Length: 142
Image 1 (cartoon, rainbow, N blue to C red):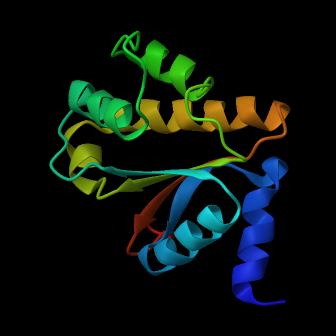
Image 2 (image 1 turned 90 degrees about the horizontal axis):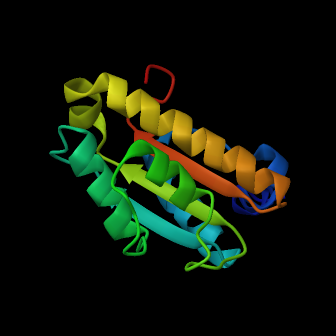
């Protein structure tokens, strides 16, 4: 079994879906596998992000949140657990360039990761894979 086929099998399994760090070099493989599975893919650039309001706006833009999005953590959780305006076989969120955000607002960053993991768990109950991955140089030290 090729590595790409194995990755596709992993991504397709809702019971394995989660939020976590991946090696930056694996980003293209994740993207290709998700596209081949019919996933909705959102590449969210957090370069220069320094806080909650900016981070929430970036999520909203990338995922085309509806006008009713409230711009707070609860609204992010509600929106990520819904996504009815973005129907797909599964979801892959690529959170790019998170280092500055993480350094400037570690508490908000951690809250966002918790919300992403809760969304993954909510989708798992519906048997839909929901992945949020953060490409970094070394995922073992992230």
